[in-house]
Length: 327
Ligand code: ATP
Ligand code: LTN
Image (tube, rainbow, N blue to C red; front, side, top):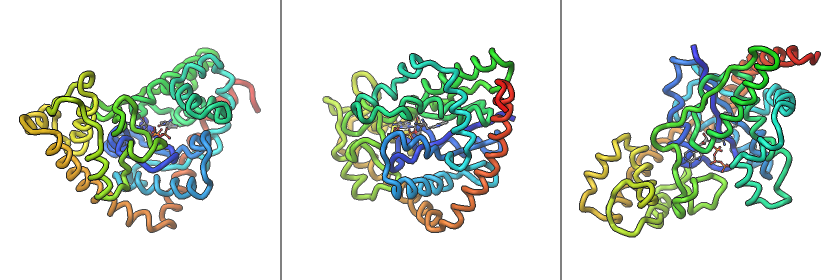
């Protein structure tokens, strides 16, 4: 049975980009594969976080994972900071990757440029190695993520191959599985930038966004110059992004949506898109609110899942330590 593993970091409120590019696809793997999902909260501290907010968002995320259909009876659900093997394997793997390789990571280049010298923390630079440790500890075969994480997955694979070559078969080589549609939802006010939960509020729609705010944000979303609903990522990036969002929520083919809007303009399209998203998110939100209200139950999910995960992770960590001569 193959292992499917992925996670979302609690660095802001979940957006429809996180949902359409990643989370939405996770529950379908349950029952078919060994499924492990986690909250990489140690990754979130590579950018300054308010401690109370970080704690709250970690619970929010666990509640969202349950809301979209992950079942603690079928999947292992853990919080990264509860399993110390992640940090330990990260240190080991640090010695099998070069500064040059990490310096080429586009997410690091973008974030460090945006943050300036005081934000260029060692943890931010080392982020992809902790991510490799996360994945390799659980012998993940498939890691379902959005397009932006492909490069990090390739690095995890390179590190695993290098280690295996030196010490014999130790780590499973992971593969990114990126969805055909929705893998790169763009910002609503700038279709050349990916929608990101740590960006400014007009650029994204949160899963927790209110109905009024969803309507306002779609109304304000940038469009392209002619008034036609046609999917063309190069010539019409803004409308193509809105079509991706539409298709992601309605589960329709883009070509069917285009046909329905033939002869109609942006106004109709945007307001109907807003209503579709309002309907979907309102129903997810009501389920989320029920699940989120029971923090004791969330604690039980976290503790139980993290204990199960620690067993798997510690075994792999011990194997790696043994291979390189660490007692
Ligand atoms: P941050 O802004 O803090 O970097 P983020 O919004 O980019 O956060 P992550 O927690 O880094 O989100 O990503 C979680 C998952 O969501 C990953 O699999 C990532 O590829 C996916 N994802 C993030 N943004 C998008 C997007 N705009 N479109 C599609 N998938 C996305
Ligand atoms: N960097 C990832 C979050 C992440 C992750 C992982 C995803 C950290 N460790 C392991 C999959 C597997 C991101 O989505 N930005």
